[in-house]
Length: 205
Picture 1 (cartoon, rainbow, N blue to C red):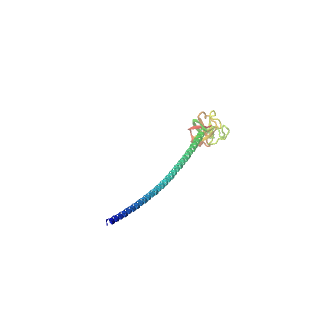
Picture 2: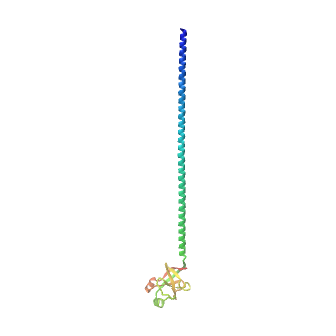
Picture 3: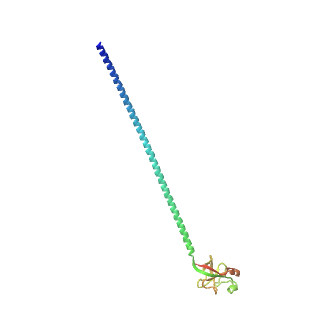
């Protein structure tokens, strides 16, 4: 009987050990499988993160390029605008200088002679002792054009500007000498209306 018990106990122990071995083997396989899956998940996750980083770098690169291009275009535009402004400014300056030169030339056409005593006369005998209307230079006296002036200062044909109006020296007078000028009018009343004035006189060069 003792022998039977020993055999039964040995068989039980053998079965128990076999079961433990199978259970351990199953657990090891499960752990290995889980480890492999975990590693695969890590690999997939790592690959995904790499792709995301690459996409982010690509987007950043494109954004930086676009920004650089925009800045370059803006700089070019500002440079062109600055050049245009400078060109327009130079043109305005040249135009202004040209106008100034033209004005200078215009002013330089006449030479200032000083202040003169300016009287008036007509063709009547009371004014000039005759009534022919013919001047000392041989021209017919014309209002708005003819004046008498000192021969030593202004030869016949000299143009003088008096009160903004240009007259021509075509006549002489016994009392007209030095800084004195006589302006011709068509009527005695017009001459009297002029009276005596003191005017700035300019001679055309």
